[in-house]
Image (cartoon, rainbow, N blue to C red; front, side, top):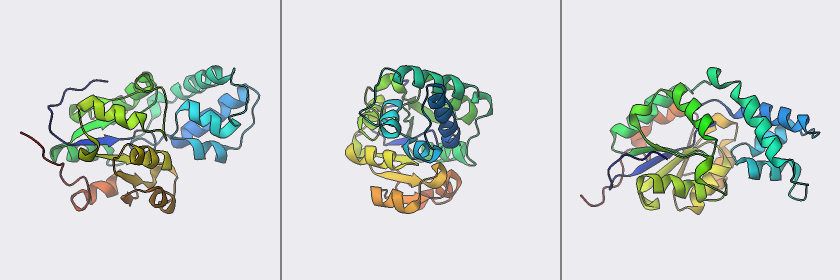
Length: 232
C-alpha cells in the first residue's frame, strides 16, 4: 500500500477488475485455461459468476470446498502467468481515469481496492494513467481473506486512515457489494463486469450505473458528489 493523503477526507474506494478496466472476461478465460491445464473442465459461466472473488474463494466456488486443495497454488500461478500475457492490451473503460480525477477534484482520497497481485495492480495502473490522483492501492499482499469477506475493504480504508462512514466503494460484482456492506461502506455498482442491475441492487448497492462514464455524468447526483468533512 502507498498512502500519501492527509487525514480527515473521505475515501472513494474503487474496485479495479471489471470496474475501471475491462478484464472480467479475460479473467474468466485465463482461469478456464488454468483449470484445464490441471485436469478440470469447468463451464465458463460458472467461472464468470465467481470472478471478483480472490483466488481462494474462486476455486472454492468453481471446484467445491470439498476438493483436494493441493493444486490450488499451481492453478492460481497458472492463471497469473496466462493473464500476464494480456498486460499490454488491458483496456480501461471509457471515462475511468476521468472518473477518478473528477472524484478527487471533489475532495475524495482515491484508493484502488484490489486483491490482485502487485504485478497485476501495477499493470492496471500503467494502463489507467491516473496515478496523479491515486492516493493508495491494495493488493493480495494486504489481505489473507478475500471478497466477499470485508477484509479488503478494511485494508483500503486503513491505507488512508478513513472510517467506514466516510467512504464509498465503487464495484461491479455482488462480491464487491457484499464486502462493502460487511465493512459498513455503501457501494455504487457498475454493470461493466457482467452482473445485472437486479443482482447488484438485491445485494445492497445504493446506486447502479451502466459504466464509469455514466457514473461520471451523474457524479453530483449521488454519494460521490462530495465527501464528509470531519475535523480540520
